Length: 272
Image 1 (tube, rainbow, N blue to C red):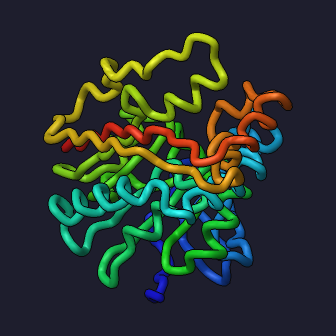
Image 2 (cartoon, helix red, strand yellow; image 1 turned 30 degrees about the horizontal axis):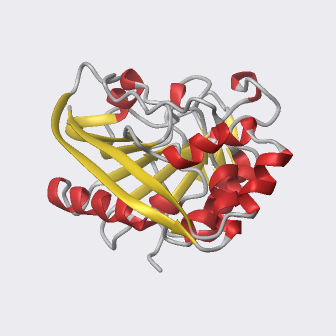
Protein backbone atom coordinates (compact mmCIF):
# COMPACT_ATOMS: atom_id res chain seq x y z
CA UNK A 1 0.00 0.00 0.00
CA UNK A 2 1.40 3.38 -1.02
CA UNK A 3 0.87 6.47 1.08
CA UNK A 4 -1.65 8.98 -0.22
CA UNK A 5 -0.92 12.70 -0.30
CA UNK A 6 -3.64 15.33 -0.31
CA UNK A 7 -4.09 16.47 -3.92
CA UNK A 8 -3.55 20.17 -4.59
CA UNK A 9 -4.62 20.38 -8.18
CA UNK A 10 -8.42 20.19 -7.94
CA UNK A 11 -10.32 23.21 -9.17
CA UNK A 12 -13.80 24.35 -8.28
CA UNK A 13 -16.39 23.05 -10.79
CA UNK A 14 -18.49 26.19 -10.22
CA UNK A 15 -15.97 29.01 -10.65
CA UNK A 16 -12.78 27.22 -11.80
CA UNK A 17 -10.71 28.60 -8.89
CA UNK A 18 -8.14 26.43 -7.12
CA UNK A 19 -9.48 24.30 -4.29
CA UNK A 20 -7.51 24.24 -1.04
CA UNK A 21 -7.87 21.38 1.42
CA UNK A 22 -8.32 21.64 5.17
CA UNK A 23 -10.06 19.49 7.77
CA UNK A 24 -11.55 17.10 5.17
CA UNK A 25 -13.00 19.93 3.13
CA UNK A 26 -12.09 21.40 -0.26
CA UNK A 27 -12.78 25.13 -0.55
CA UNK A 28 -12.11 27.82 -3.18
CA UNK A 29 -11.58 31.55 -2.78
CA UNK A 30 -15.27 32.13 -3.58
CA UNK A 31 -16.21 29.98 -0.61
CA UNK A 32 -17.60 27.07 -2.60
CA UNK A 33 -16.85 24.01 -0.51
CA UNK A 34 -16.93 20.26 -1.04
CA UNK A 35 -16.58 17.75 1.76
CA UNK A 36 -14.35 14.73 1.50
CA UNK A 37 -16.41 11.55 1.91
CA UNK A 38 -15.49 9.04 4.58
CA UNK A 39 -14.24 6.69 1.83
CA UNK A 40 -11.75 9.37 0.75
CA UNK A 41 -13.21 10.66 -2.50
CA UNK A 42 -14.60 14.14 -3.14
CA UNK A 43 -17.83 14.85 -5.02
CA UNK A 44 -17.13 17.66 -7.50
CA UNK A 45 -20.30 17.22 -9.52
CA UNK A 46 -22.74 20.00 -8.56
CA UNK A 47 -26.42 19.22 -8.77
CA UNK A 48 -26.89 21.73 -11.59
CA UNK A 49 -24.35 19.80 -13.71
CA UNK A 50 -26.27 16.52 -13.44
CA UNK A 51 -28.49 15.38 -16.29
CA UNK A 52 -30.27 12.86 -14.09
CA UNK A 53 -30.66 12.02 -10.40
CA UNK A 54 -28.05 9.26 -10.52
CA UNK A 55 -25.91 9.74 -13.66
CA UNK A 56 -23.48 7.19 -15.04
CA UNK A 57 -23.52 3.42 -14.75
CA UNK A 58 -26.05 2.06 -12.29
CA UNK A 59 -25.14 -0.11 -9.31
CA UNK A 60 -25.85 -3.38 -11.10
CA UNK A 61 -23.54 -2.47 -14.00
CA UNK A 62 -20.79 -1.37 -11.63
CA UNK A 63 -20.95 -4.56 -9.59
CA UNK A 64 -21.05 -6.74 -12.71
CA UNK A 65 -18.00 -5.00 -14.19
CA UNK A 66 -16.05 -5.34 -10.95
CA UNK A 67 -16.83 -9.07 -10.74
CA UNK A 68 -15.94 -9.60 -14.40
CA UNK A 69 -12.68 -7.64 -14.37
CA UNK A 70 -11.55 -9.26 -11.12
CA UNK A 71 -11.55 -12.60 -12.98
CA UNK A 72 -8.77 -11.30 -15.25
CA UNK A 73 -10.58 -11.55 -18.58
CA UNK A 74 -9.11 -8.20 -19.68
CA UNK A 75 -5.65 -8.77 -18.21
CA UNK A 76 -3.92 -8.67 -21.63
CA UNK A 77 -5.32 -5.17 -22.07
CA UNK A 78 -4.00 -3.89 -18.74
CA UNK A 79 -0.59 -5.45 -19.45
CA UNK A 80 -0.36 -3.57 -22.74
CA UNK A 81 -1.48 -0.31 -21.12
CA UNK A 82 1.13 -0.63 -18.39
CA UNK A 83 3.82 -1.44 -20.97
CA UNK A 84 2.96 1.73 -22.90
CA UNK A 85 2.99 3.78 -19.69
CA UNK A 86 6.42 2.46 -18.77
CA UNK A 87 7.68 3.14 -22.29
CA UNK A 88 6.53 6.74 -22.63
CA UNK A 89 5.78 8.31 -19.23
CA UNK A 90 8.27 9.41 -16.59
CA UNK A 91 8.21 7.75 -13.17
CA UNK A 92 6.98 10.89 -11.37
CA UNK A 93 4.07 11.56 -13.68
CA UNK A 94 0.58 12.59 -12.66
CA UNK A 95 -1.95 10.20 -14.22
CA UNK A 96 -5.66 10.53 -14.86
CA UNK A 97 -8.08 7.69 -15.51
CA UNK A 98 -10.88 9.60 -17.24
CA UNK A 99 -14.03 7.58 -16.64
CA UNK A 100 -12.45 5.38 -13.98
CA UNK A 101 -15.52 3.42 -12.92
CA UNK A 102 -14.74 1.24 -9.92
CA UNK A 103 -10.98 1.82 -10.30
CA UNK A 104 -9.79 -1.47 -11.80
CA UNK A 105 -7.45 0.17 -14.31
CA UNK A 106 -6.70 3.17 -12.08
CA UNK A 107 -4.93 1.41 -9.24
CA UNK A 108 -2.80 -0.78 -11.50
CA UNK A 109 -0.95 2.32 -12.71
CA UNK A 110 0.06 3.31 -9.17
CA UNK A 111 3.75 3.27 -8.24
CA UNK A 112 5.71 4.62 -5.30
CA UNK A 113 6.61 7.85 -7.08
CA UNK A 114 3.59 8.82 -9.21
CA UNK A 115 0.20 10.31 -8.37
CA UNK A 116 -2.85 8.58 -9.82
CA UNK A 117 -6.30 10.14 -10.13
CA UNK A 118 -9.61 8.69 -11.19
CA UNK A 119 -12.75 10.63 -12.06
CA UNK A 120 -16.19 9.33 -12.99
CA UNK A 121 -19.72 10.66 -13.09
CA UNK A 122 -21.09 7.56 -11.33
CA UNK A 123 -20.94 8.23 -7.59
CA UNK A 124 -21.51 4.59 -6.67
CA UNK A 125 -18.54 3.48 -8.76
CA UNK A 126 -16.26 6.16 -7.31
CA UNK A 127 -17.29 5.21 -3.77
CA UNK A 128 -16.29 1.61 -4.42
CA UNK A 129 -12.99 2.66 -6.02
CA UNK A 130 -12.03 5.03 -3.22
CA UNK A 131 -12.87 2.50 -0.51
CA UNK A 132 -10.90 -0.24 -2.22
CA UNK A 133 -7.84 1.64 -3.54
CA UNK A 134 -6.65 4.03 -0.85
CA UNK A 135 -3.42 4.92 -2.67
CA UNK A 136 -5.23 6.73 -5.53
CA UNK A 137 -7.23 9.99 -5.59
CA UNK A 138 -10.85 9.65 -6.70
CA UNK A 139 -13.49 12.26 -7.43
CA UNK A 140 -17.00 12.39 -8.81
CA UNK A 141 -17.07 14.71 -11.80
CA UNK A 142 -18.01 15.09 -15.42
CA UNK A 143 -15.57 14.61 -18.29
CA UNK A 144 -17.00 17.67 -20.01
CA UNK A 145 -15.87 19.87 -17.11
CA UNK A 146 -12.97 18.09 -15.44
CA UNK A 147 -12.34 19.32 -11.88
CA UNK A 148 -8.59 19.75 -12.41
CA UNK A 149 -6.21 22.61 -13.10
CA UNK A 150 -4.81 23.24 -16.58
CA UNK A 151 -1.69 21.42 -17.78
CA UNK A 152 -1.44 19.06 -14.81
CA UNK A 153 -1.38 15.51 -16.14
CA UNK A 154 1.44 13.80 -18.02
CA UNK A 155 -0.60 10.71 -18.84
CA UNK A 156 -4.37 10.49 -19.40
CA UNK A 157 -6.20 7.38 -20.47
CA UNK A 158 -9.80 6.84 -21.52
CA UNK A 159 -11.07 3.25 -21.59
CA UNK A 160 -14.49 2.86 -23.17
CA UNK A 161 -15.43 6.33 -21.97
CA UNK A 162 -16.44 9.46 -23.90
CA UNK A 163 -13.41 11.06 -25.55
CA UNK A 164 -13.58 14.84 -25.18
CA UNK A 165 -10.45 16.17 -26.85
CA UNK A 166 -10.70 19.83 -25.84
CA UNK A 167 -11.12 19.10 -22.14
CA UNK A 168 -8.51 16.36 -22.10
CA UNK A 169 -6.06 18.69 -23.86
CA UNK A 170 -6.73 21.42 -21.31
CA UNK A 171 -5.59 19.32 -18.35
CA UNK A 172 -2.78 17.62 -20.27
CA UNK A 173 0.76 18.96 -19.98
CA UNK A 174 2.70 20.01 -23.04
CA UNK A 175 4.25 16.86 -24.55
CA UNK A 176 1.92 14.79 -22.34
CA UNK A 177 0.14 11.69 -23.60
CA UNK A 178 -3.49 10.70 -24.12
CA UNK A 179 -4.29 6.99 -24.45
CA UNK A 180 -7.67 5.85 -25.78
CA UNK A 181 -9.08 2.33 -25.73
CA UNK A 182 -12.00 1.62 -28.05
CA UNK A 183 -13.58 -1.57 -29.42
CA UNK A 184 -11.87 -3.05 -32.45
CA UNK A 185 -13.91 -4.66 -35.20
CA UNK A 186 -14.65 -8.02 -33.60
CA UNK A 187 -15.02 -7.05 -29.95
CA UNK A 188 -17.66 -9.28 -28.30
CA UNK A 189 -19.01 -10.21 -31.72
CA UNK A 190 -20.24 -13.65 -30.57
CA UNK A 191 -22.21 -12.04 -27.75
CA UNK A 192 -23.65 -9.44 -30.12
CA UNK A 193 -24.72 -12.24 -32.46
CA UNK A 194 -26.95 -13.63 -29.73
CA UNK A 195 -28.64 -10.26 -29.28
CA UNK A 196 -28.98 -8.87 -32.80
CA UNK A 197 -30.33 -10.69 -35.83
CA UNK A 198 -27.72 -9.00 -38.02
CA UNK A 199 -24.78 -8.21 -35.76
CA UNK A 200 -22.41 -5.59 -37.14
CA UNK A 201 -18.72 -5.26 -36.53
CA UNK A 202 -17.44 -2.11 -34.83
CA UNK A 203 -16.47 0.77 -37.10
CA UNK A 204 -12.84 1.64 -36.36
CA UNK A 205 -12.43 4.20 -39.14
CA UNK A 206 -13.48 7.16 -37.01
CA UNK A 207 -10.80 9.03 -35.07
CA UNK A 208 -12.21 11.42 -32.42
CA UNK A 209 -8.83 13.12 -31.87
CA UNK A 210 -7.80 15.85 -34.32
CA UNK A 211 -5.46 18.25 -32.52
CA UNK A 212 -3.03 15.77 -30.94
CA UNK A 213 -0.39 13.71 -32.70
CA UNK A 214 -0.97 9.96 -33.04
CA UNK A 215 2.35 8.32 -32.15
CA UNK A 216 1.45 4.64 -31.95
CA UNK A 217 -1.46 2.26 -32.32
CA UNK A 218 -1.83 -1.21 -30.83
CA UNK A 219 -4.34 -3.92 -31.64
CA UNK A 220 -5.04 -6.62 -29.03
CA UNK A 221 -7.19 -9.59 -29.94
CA UNK A 222 -7.73 -12.89 -28.12
CA UNK A 223 -10.43 -15.41 -27.34
CA UNK A 224 -12.10 -15.50 -23.94
CA UNK A 225 -13.49 -18.81 -22.74
CA UNK A 226 -16.37 -18.76 -20.27
CA UNK A 227 -16.68 -21.89 -18.19
CA UNK A 228 -19.03 -20.28 -15.64
CA UNK A 229 -22.26 -18.73 -16.83
CA UNK A 230 -22.09 -16.06 -14.11
CA UNK A 231 -19.07 -14.56 -15.87
CA UNK A 232 -20.97 -14.39 -19.14
CA UNK A 233 -23.97 -12.80 -17.42
CA UNK A 234 -21.64 -10.21 -15.82
CA UNK A 235 -20.13 -9.43 -19.19
CA UNK A 236 -23.57 -8.76 -20.60
CA UNK A 237 -24.59 -6.68 -17.57
CA UNK A 238 -21.56 -4.38 -17.78
CA UNK A 239 -22.14 -3.46 -21.43
CA UNK A 240 -24.83 -1.39 -23.17
CA UNK A 241 -26.07 -4.72 -24.56
CA UNK A 242 -27.78 -5.29 -21.23
CA UNK A 243 -30.49 -2.83 -22.26
CA UNK A 244 -31.29 -5.09 -25.22
CA UNK A 245 -31.47 -8.25 -23.13
CA UNK A 246 -34.61 -10.26 -22.50
CA UNK A 247 -35.60 -13.13 -20.22
CA UNK A 248 -35.18 -15.55 -23.10
CA UNK A 249 -31.67 -14.24 -23.80
CA UNK A 250 -30.67 -14.55 -20.15
CA UNK A 251 -31.99 -18.11 -20.10
CA UNK A 252 -30.00 -18.90 -23.23
CA UNK A 253 -26.81 -17.44 -21.76
CA UNK A 254 -27.28 -19.43 -18.55
CA UNK A 255 -27.39 -22.59 -20.63
CA UNK A 256 -24.12 -21.85 -22.39
CA UNK A 257 -21.21 -24.10 -21.41
CA UNK A 258 -17.67 -23.27 -22.54
CA UNK A 259 -18.87 -20.27 -24.51
CA UNK A 260 -16.11 -18.44 -26.37
CA UNK A 261 -16.11 -14.76 -27.24
CA UNK A 262 -13.61 -12.46 -28.88
CA UNK A 263 -11.92 -9.64 -27.00
CA UNK A 264 -10.73 -7.08 -29.53
CA UNK A 265 -9.25 -3.73 -28.47
CA UNK A 266 -7.78 -0.77 -30.32
CA UNK A 267 -5.30 1.32 -28.33
CA UNK A 268 -4.15 4.69 -29.62
CA UNK A 269 -1.47 6.86 -28.02
CA UNK A 270 -1.46 10.60 -28.79
CA UNK A 271 0.94 13.34 -27.72
CA UNK A 272 0.16 17.00 -27.09
